[in-house]
Image 1 (cartoon, rainbow, N blue to C red):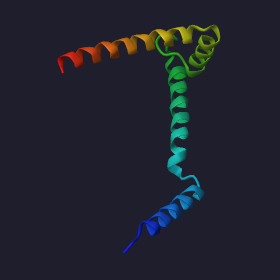
Image 2: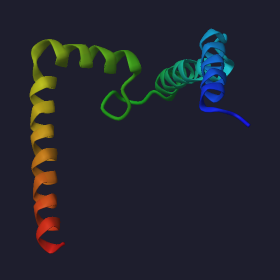
Image 3: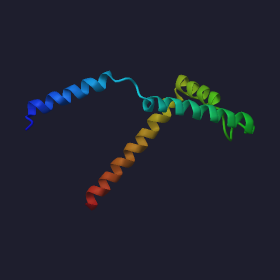
Amino acid sequence: MHTSRTIGTHAGQRLRRRARAPISWQHALTPVALLVFVALWDLVVRWGGYPAFVLPGPARVAARFAQAVQDGTLQAHVLVTLSEVFGGLALGLSVALVLG
């Protein structure tokens, strides 16, 4: 029969073993998949000859993102979006509370 002390000791040993375990291939899969996605996106833009207003390349998107952060437009748009989201949430909760 296991006591709580015995179970706790085994759980602690498993946590220590897990903390020392090397990074598995599954943990490396996400950044690799992201890099593959960006590389394929860049190839499609280059080989497809799409205009930038249809499909901009990853370098152009990154440059525009950096510009939006620097000049403050991103923060302004985020604030407007958050106010709309929370306003809609408040309205929906109010209606649900009344109807509930």
